[in-house]
Image (cartoon, rainbow, N blue to C red; front, side):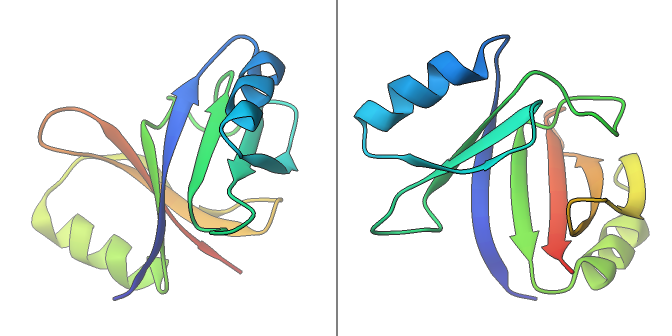
Length: 115
């Protein structure tokens, strides 16, 4: 399994304001779905931060996103470990396949691959 990127997901009622703030640090908007905005460094595109009001298709807001090369294999490994699956493995309309799992301290991790 290869980890491609790790992105903190910041909860905010005003993603636009946060987009402006993180712009001051050199980030540029690379995705805006209305409820989630992802900002990335132009010189290092895997250095990213997402700001979201809430997750549109899941029951909880993930604390962090981890993009992997094979989400199905990771899902099977996580399921086999007995960890709590918070959101089932599914394909999303914006081109990712993902699931949520709770880490030992209760944080919600969004594990995904792009299709």
